[in-house]
Image (cartoon, rainbow over all chains, first blue to last red):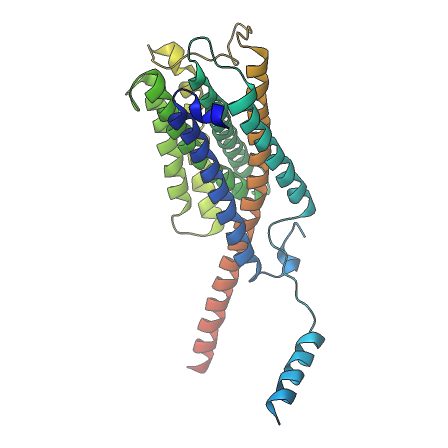
Length: 50
Length: 263
């Protein structure tokens, strides 16, 4: 862990990973939450994947 | 009736009521796929930041490649799926809205990852070129591609029924995908700061260390799995949005008919 923090341009490199995974996590969480909210209003019979 | 008896009666009623389970967008398959994706992402971080060696020329900055290249791969893949599904919607006899929903879901995912490509590319550019942004051929065409698909999503948001939405967005989806070869070949067609393709090169020689190449492929596989997972969830949400939209319209029509019958 210390080696990663000590590498040259660590701020930019770790920043690129942090931004990528934060956006992926946020997008996935929003998608699941939106899906759950919609699912409460729709009958299971109308959901082709169930 | 005492407070105690009221409470016990309420509890008894709740227990007797059938449990209504509402299935969300997940299934057993998506949960397995999600688990696999998370595991591959863990490997990507371990290889990208730990096991893979530093580059001879770019030193540690090369580690950004392991997230930058998979994000652009996912965006290209998403936009290609959008075009494919748009074509299937337009040219198939059934004009199935399922194709339209896959096209729309894929474009949304593509826009998010194209945005990530631009951000990670800017961070990499700051290290290697000394600037975040340059109006270079590759950067400019990539920004244009991003804006085009934001426009595609805006077109989907215009009014009209589901088939009107599907038709007009399918045309935009088929036109916008033409930009992908332009972006990919921009580094060869014009003088560019951006390096030429290392893996998808026309001569077939891959001039890259084995562990670096392996780390890159871990990223590509992880992001491909992520794309499938996101696409399944988003297309199912879109299907429910359309159902609710139809129900809302039906209710409004019923209300108007009832009003007309009274008057």
